[in-house]
Image 1 (cartoon, rainbow, N blue to C red):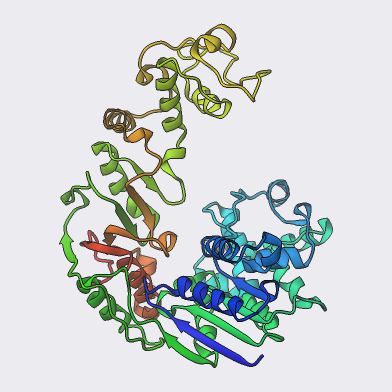
Image 2 (spheres, rainbow, N blue to C red; image 1 turned 90 degrees about the horizontal axis):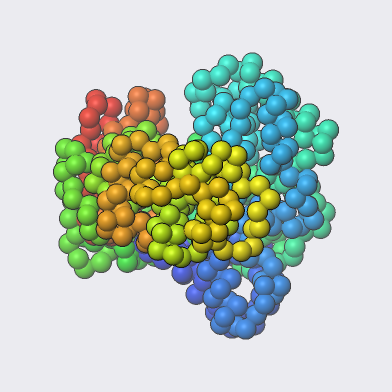
Length: 502
């Protein structure tokens, strides 16, 4: 490996765009696209990289086979088929074997680690963090302050290891291990790495292995946004890599006041790369509020951020009461089954047809013997590749419903009814995208909005860590406030456990 260039970019400075511009220049210089690796923590950056290169240089997907997430790279290099991956029915089978509930969810777009709140998810998460960060299992268990005993964790981890070996299965971390043991790996001329601050110890080893034969590599990230330490991310590795440093100078997202506050918070971080960067020539606003209901969110785009998910409950209740179209976490509101059911019922009553998928959502919400005859909710022996009108459903599929959706749908509480009535009246229920998004800070890294509300309350557990390892929380709230493009609202704490944003 001849040269490493480290690109540091604060929020909104265009790290990914900079990498893509360099990528285009290298192709113009004569580097073969098939010998270029572009690796990112998320699929979003990869999708844009693929789109730009294919369009500009008239290439095919096969020409850029190494534009991948790290896990996707391992998957391809190892020629793994889906039946060899620990997911789906295999997770369910293991869950039943060890008698713990598991959500069976994993996010390849992020760390490749399990996501969920059930006991089995937490046991799996602890095991995965220990392996991906190459740390002692007991040390990770202690650091995560798990509710389960270490004996339970030890039994679970051993059972998982034996289960995967017996069934010849691999999880994401196993794939990294297998890749590192491969004799023949892709020989690349250039390696690009985006969101480098989020890579785990094992992922860094994969990047180092890929870089052995390359002529130059570009590593982009922002150590001030390294908020996944709890999931095994190794920001120290990113900071310690030797190379020529470039700092992107201007944030095209942040106005002056928010930029000033961002610098105040980042300067609290003890372990960081010093960066000089400016912002847009616009003042912006920072407003402190006592209650979420002090804000009128009837217009504009909004992002409501909290340190923990449960802290979003009041904001969600407020949105419901006001009838505002919102999404929460990773669950897009437009995919809510009641949204689809109400849309479908309105369409049917307007003599329009609906698809089979819409019909399934509608029938799952109908009250038996009020909206649909008993025995028909399962939609047995019905064609799936045609559209349906209301007369067909009444004649053939047991539809009884007449009148308003409020009368025929089950499972709606009064607050939900008021919200959906407002959405129908405003016609927001027919929009493809919600104006308001509620999320944890970790769930919205990379996002942005004109208006951002940051809740300053933290849990007791987080407050304790703030007093022993403050860098982590400084980074979390730095990420939170830098999502704001115009107006930042700081919700004052309701408890004695909080982060002092100002």
